[in-house]
Length: 186
Image 1 (cartoon, rainbow, N blue to C red):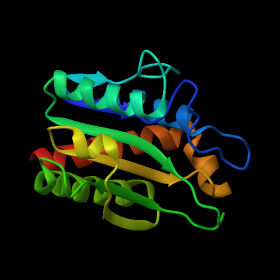
Image 2 (cartoon, one colour; image 1 turned 90 degrees about the horizontal axis):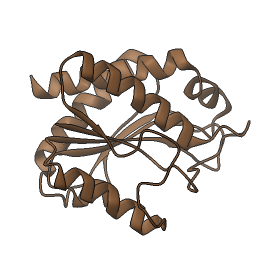
Image 3 (cartoon, rainbow, N blue to C red; image 1 turned 30 degrees about the vertical axis):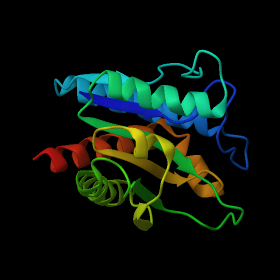
Image 4 (cartoon, helix red, strand yellow; image 1 turned 180 degrees about the vertical axis):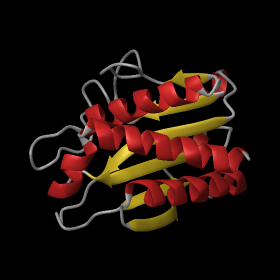
């Protein structure tokens, strides 16, 4: 069981690009492409959201994060993949990073998954390799399975913003994530 978590949604737009692209929309599009690829490969896929909505019934940022974790833990997922776009006040910053929590229950496995995903994404979509990083993001720290948070590219970078909202790039990114999952499982 693979839980795909399109970051943000509903009242939470996430980061906003220079031409007003919303991170929540990019995250959902990439996640839906990934769901299709994994389903075609006969994997069981569960999504924390499949439309532009909050995951928590009564939205607060904390409640939404807790709802994502509860969803993955209650469904006894084998992997948790959270999809995001990065942002920086410097519009020249670009690249891809995959995060895991060193404090999570499955830190060692999460690190291996993060490495496989980072390599596959950078090799497939040719983004700058910002590396595998550790961070205590709530959703990847509190789930009970190997978990990563992918910062696909910088929505704050005008060039990467255009790539992130392009369906071809979204599909290629989803394919790269699939290949990373495959390498990890293999």
